[in-house]
Length: 114
Image (cartoon, rainbow, N blue to C red; front, top):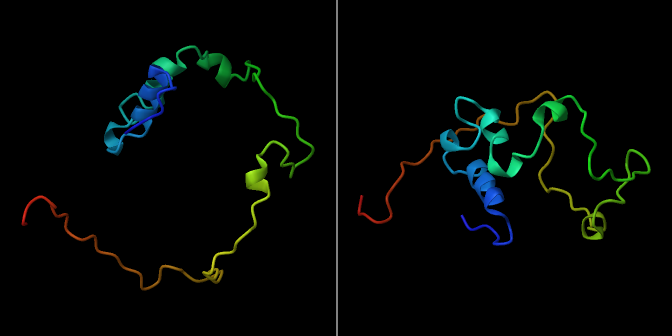
């Protein structure tokens, strides 16, 4: 995985740990769970007890003008034309996966003739 060079080594370590391809080896999937993430180098300055007790004030609190305020989002997202999916919505009382089946094909090695 290639990450931007401007990120610190601690940020690289955190991202690589969280994005590990094998879920059983991802940061936080071990026996200590989220404690493993909390102990990583990039997050070491956080006082987790105070954070969980909501005793830490955020460094930035955006001003919002109501429930649907979009002022803090970039215009390229808020001015984008809406497109609707061509797929129809499933009927409320029906299972959209009726008669659906999937069998994963056997894994093949592209470097052998198997």
